[in-house]
Length: 345
Image: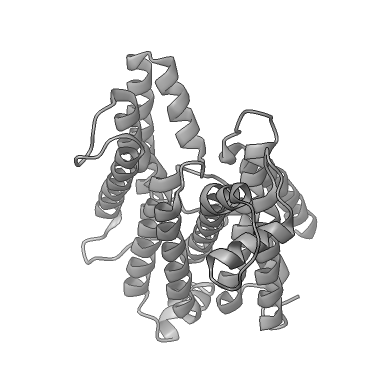
């Protein structure tokens, strides 16, 4: 199926699949809730009808599970579209949302708060971790862009990747040294959980924030779909098509970095989503970004909803970091993709 053959009907099907996945996921847990009761709770809360639901089902579905499931879908969508944009801008199949050292910078802020137990901007606990992670991510972004920018303000993909690698290594060394010197096993466990990602801490306020970020980011990137299509043919061809390469690259690089920084600050570094999903969707839709971006957002959302469902239910009484689940899914897919590419070459 090519990008042109993938009609809006396919996007509608993906939207229905996401809605069904969320409805089923909301009913899965230590206390099972039927899909019918899930829909009744949601409809009642949205004033779509007077449905008879038990207080327990209402508390479980609306207060406990829905913010988490909604947040997981939003994070998956946001990471997926950021991966699409960065892979197109750099023409690098291995590019992902953490290309600019965002996750490593966020880890510096978050790990500092977790290990040292300090407050940040007057905040404490998970709020301090989130705020420190966001500031750390922005700090790493500023350093990477300062190192990568040319004398005339150009932004070379090669220099950007190298700068991101360098900053990530320095940040990784700092966080490792801090954990080792502290010698607190409980802090080390919490750091490991954060670095592997989790949506367990999402509540309604944070779920709404990441949802708005994902929706706005997807819409904004779709507005650049034609320019991203032009980048597929190289910078020279893009310029000949009237694309201001430097301006577009700066806007999209900074945009993806800000979106990633926000998502990482709330849920930690969840790997493989932004790397794997764009490749999966390109196989289904082709390279046209006007379809590739919204489809990637929907597929990324479905993937992370189910990854989180597995993470919180696979082991009784214990939650697996969501990054472990996405890695288990992503690594075999990449092995298959490499084999598929080798057979075609």
